[in-house]
Image (cartoon, rainbow over the protein chains, first blue to last red):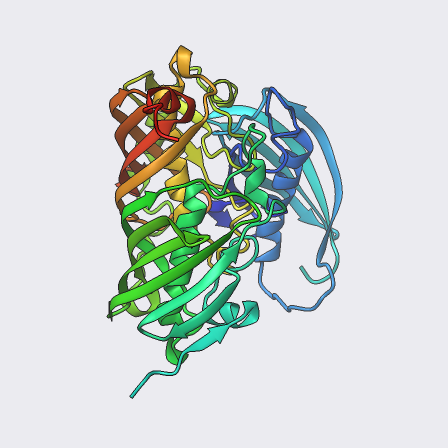
Length: 130
Length: 326
């Protein structure tokens, strides 16, 4: 379920640039859709939430207990502008807008070859001490 | 003094080498003298993942799976030694790789690997595979233990200039994506290792791209904590690029193919998730169903795997076979 292949730039609590390679040899392409493989929009959102979690989680004290430190609270204003195909590289740009009152929000956009494909706003609930 | 031969079952094999399901391709080591030889077998069953990647009713064991089974038996010749157990080993070179007959699910491949030399983390040797006592495949190989040799891994995204070069290549885009590739080839998921063709002259040469992402099934098992593309998958990617040089010709679309001989297989570079492999395949000769050519490949402009190959179009070759023999 890890949908990030690399991070090119990260500033804890501020921003994160990450990317995911797309290849036909992934489990969702053969069935989504049989003659026209494209990356499911919901999985793009999952990749975005993972890219947003990184700058929140590498922020300072990383006590490794079992409790979940952050929890997804909302995804808003999702817009898909074009499809993502096998062979594309999805570049994800997370810009954190606000971290306050136990809530973190960020604007996220994704590009393929410097052309915007998707954007949205993601909100995380910070459980404690993050 | 005679060396004592030892044997290994699956837990024993996994104690020696790092390959795991679904990338472990030997079942038993029946006889092994560390630093000398290893004998054992691999049983094939239709319930394995790679039998389901081709639109043909008769499943067969892919040649690169035979290469991988042979290399894993070869690993046992030196990783079975007490002090080397558990080390990761990487394919470096294969040569004189031959496939003499089709292997079917339900058959048993008896493997025999001989270590010819081992020093400074570099192992050289020969492996043969028999089915029912008949020679089916053989190769010479060189395998490296990076812990002992120094790591081969280049850093990911190291040089921004190189990155830009990679982007330029992808920008020169022609409309030959996965749909068109599937029109030409019988391969399907999970045995289709091409994403896009960026340059093509059918019957001559092509340039194709395969992206690697951690979400592919082989990365978690190869290896936990240190994912890299298995050598045999790299070979298969390039092989599919080569086959597409002639499968893209109108009269050869969706024909069944088989690779027969591989020479000078050089695995020059470790490939990690997030990288893209760019393959350049050239068809040097093609007649009577026999295709010969070469494949080179690059990651971020750095040379990766390359080899020389001979492959056949199965039914075309049948037509030209002498008919008198029974």
